[in-house]
Amino acid sequence: MRTASGTQRVSPTGPKGNKTLTRPLGGGGSERWAEAVQYASYRLLRAGVASPRYDAEELAAHVLGTDRGRLPLLLHEVMDSHLAEEFWRLVAQRASRIPLQSLLGSVGFRGLRVAVRPGVFIPRPETEVLVEVAVEHLRTQASLPEDGGPPPESRLSARGARFMARRRGPNVLEIGTGSGCVALAVAHEIPASKVWATDVSAEALHCAASNATRLGLAGRVVFLRADLTSAFGRRAGSAFDAVLSNPPYVPTAQLHSLMPEVSCHDPVRALDGGPDGLTVVRRILKEAPRLLSPGGLLALELGDGQADELLGDEKTVDWLGRTGMEILDPVPDLAGVPRVFRALKKGAVS
Image (cartoon, rainbow, N blue to C red; front, side):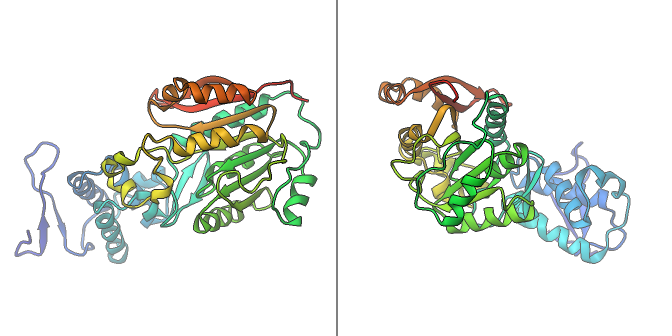
């Protein structure tokens, strides 16, 4: 409610429950950033935001043009009226459950700052495990061919063919690149790698290409508009040392129960994995083995319990065996959830 003095009272109250928080309408005046961040934290808490204090601090740092680590040095300062107006606008949007990353315009991923935009899947921290698995494999893989192996036969431009042919080091394919975070992180951490990334969304590919340019990696990754591996011909051969994907894996019936930040803002095509969440995963497992070189890694991010479900699927296990794949133990994320399904192409690395 609004009071006669022009302040807005809110509930719940402070940590001890004995004081009603207020803030001047429109910000400014003598209000300091410390008070504003405290108020914003409670407002976001009321709205159901999972990390209200963190988000309030990130928004304050964003408006002040600094990073969250340096924010404490500025909290004692009085709010400028224009900055206050921008801060409270962002807080209101976050309270409406617009993702923090969308409001900031970017997200940190493996030490890179990746831009995000509406209509493109927002990277999550657990996907960093997928990159970690790939990087560790590529760094320890024994004696790759000096030229990285022959380029795959595909429906590509002459420029794309020259790219694959001229670069040295491991060849990597990411399926469903979205913002490009996985492909760009691999290219950044494995400087000798040649990375290809596919997506069906033109909007996602534009975002990914823009990120590559901004991060100075435009010459390191080729982005292709394609459905999974369709850009590569059936006679592509064993061209890649790693095939990676964070595919849609949410069961269709569970889409409505996701947090609003996800269900209302991420593209459905990047979430919906079909009746059991594994429709796209099974397609990748069917298509990817032919593209892997001996010793090559297939790594897919999955949801909780899905790795065990795949391991219990006789048809899937049989298919992987017949295509020369050896299933490895899944890799857990920081919460202990088996997050990354792994399989290796059998045979010595030539």
